[in-house]
Length: 425
Image 1 (tube, rainbow, N blue to C red):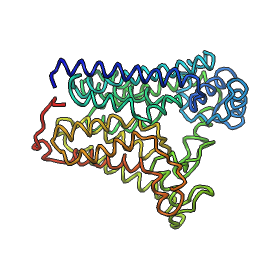
Image 2 (image 1 turned 60 degrees about the vertical axis):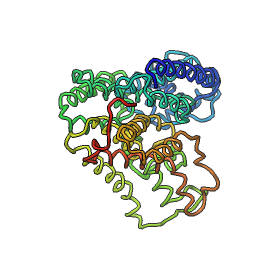
Image 3 (image 1 turned 180 degrees about the horizontal axis):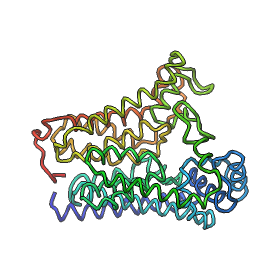
Image 4 (image 1 turned 120 degrees about the vertical axis):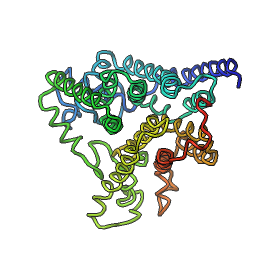
């Protein structure tokens, strides 16, 4: 495609998609009750206005009553984020609830748009006329987990941007502090990005790791005096100490929408309430250690591949793609909206397949991308009997295949002999 025409087409398509998406999912969703944002808002209210820990059940009951009386909501899901994240959510709690909800929704729209240049042009070093930014932008704005992120008022897009900034910083060799800053902030919000330390360690970014740890320590020490007494103990007892095969307060980890390895094993070995019986009934000791074994195996294989010599051009992109998929699979709870964080891995896989002329992989990758973008009916009654219960975890299998593909590309010593043409996309 001609560069000028391709660039104009990209700009026009992006403008059309953003306009359509904003009209439908800002002005429409602004009238709806979010699902997760109220937890952030009322946890901050409980913390800074009533000086009560949001991790204690008795205190959370107070927040539920406030939510019901002021917002008309029925269910207030528990707040599970680490205590240092509360000052960030406290910024929203300074506003009235409806104004705060609209602000989060608007910021999510802006962050979705910001992801496009940051990832395609910053990290992948592509140009607007290339195929991947054009197709990738169309895919982004038709990706149901993105819509779900907006609907729930989630912070996934913020974590996605922070991850991309860390990624870009490593690639462009920023000062370690500026790489550490977005990484530390993402860890404050979600914890799981701490696994990116593995990439930094393998690449000998030791200063970045030290800066990140220092920032985390400082943020924790500075924020703690402004938080309720005993909040860290409450969080450790009710959230952080919960392992695999355990429900969190107010959250059933075995729910169909949970697409993690942990949830698959819970549904397979313990069934789901009265909806269906266990598919298999192993000894209790085996059931208890199975998620640790399987998730540990996923982590060890990923670690082994990440530790390989830095011998391929796009190794950093593959490493981040691998560990983004690992985080989704091994987290105890991975809802459909968390798939927003898998988007870079999907794009990296397509870039590798097309640049490396591995056309045999394209139908598989297209099938994965299609399945992950769907509004999948995890709770379909057809999935409640026998081996069909395994279909509940369809998106987990798609992420697993994507992970395997990225591992294969990273381990393929002759991949550059397949006709790779830099910048062709």
